[in-house]
Length: 277
Length: 312
Image 1 (tube, rainbow over the protein chains, first blue to last red):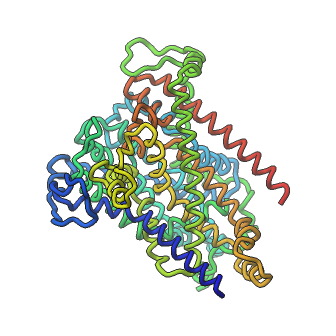
Image 2 (image 1 turned 90 degrees about the vertical axis):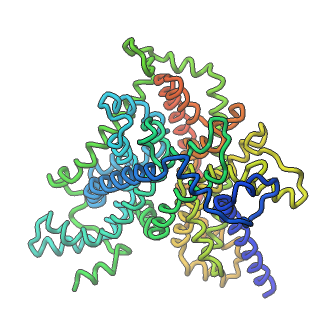
Image 3 (image 1 turned 60 degrees about the vertical axis):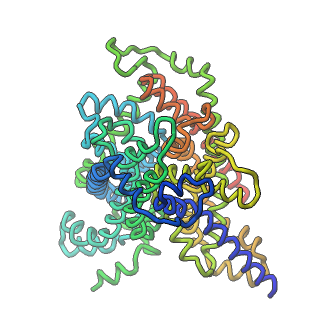
């Protein structure tokens, strides 16, 4: 019995370590965001700001076009996630329900596409988009994001489709419903929560994405939030800590909220895709 | 009514040996696939092949003369590019240095979270934070932690009497370890969630049976938990290795490859070559080498796994 108690105590100690490790950078970000300049210059920083202030947030908005950047991010993320889900769902359905060479090829592509360094794809894409005059445009970025989101969208959706029993579709077919009708009235409603989760995951991924946006968007007015955030860090790596922290904190909030809402579904979907393929 | 009953039954355990699978493709299937297939071919597979082709050309940005086929010239140059191989070495050190602790820490956390502990919900909630954050913000956040004067790390070390602190991200010897810690922090939650989900696959009855037989925690882990967890663990480790080797944003924000190239991951190197110096062909060749080496490493790993799998 004593060893059991000891084990319990050990488990709680370990859990505490994890909690500290996970939380402390984020708490420090929040603390820094609310500190006045005087306290940030102090050589002995404290966890809790003595004089909490919103000045950093005001200054952040003054220094960089954060609102416009957030709107750009929103456009890219909404556009990409909607298009990705609309075109991925039918394909995921076919992959999940038919064992065709195409389904195999698509699955192979999903796996392989995870292994490629983006640089090998972005150079030719850059040249192609340049010829189409889509460099430095939201359309070009959304196109890239759609293709970038497709592998994991397919992966998740295939899992969700497999969770819909084929018997339901067959029953509808026996009742005389055509293929499209079966899909729309039987399969789609059961898939809806999974589709929403996939779309939200694609949204967050695009909202957070940095590399493609960095390469493709040159004009400051068109840049997305992650790219604009890096402007707070000067060329020499010197940063105005307060506004930097404030802007970074704000940029995280939307994804945190969305993620908190759908976290369970995402993990469920990923696992379904992983275990059943 | 039968519909809802069937839906509640869900996928688990329903046999799907129906006529559809393995059957001929009907024409509707093509119609359903095309909307995704065309963008995949045009914007993913096509550029990839084009990119491999570019590696054999002298393609440069802003060049007026037409691009020429130069054969394996770029690869020959790469062979002698000591800076590239240095960045490659750093990339491997970084990928292993992040992937291994990430896995071990995630495994520990997943095992803890599958126990009946208080505060479990808090750990689960916190584990979301690094996963949902933009990598750029993770980088910025840790710059604040590592800041030589205003950062919490040095202040804590001073409080504990462990020296006067230092500029972690600018130190030649500390930069790479400091960046690795951030990589571990950023990727651990996702791995934890995957492993946690994998743990749910372990049969509870087996666990209880093993406990009845008097097996200790460690034995139960080895004989019951690990065999069930292994497929998920291997998959997530392989993916993590690849993702880490190819990562960019985190280190770009933390150090931008500095100091003196000590944290210049291959992706940072290739990015600079392509988009600062405009050497598209050369950078594409780098991408090809990265893919080739990763494939070889993973293939070896796979072979080892298959061999190991024979005994069990």
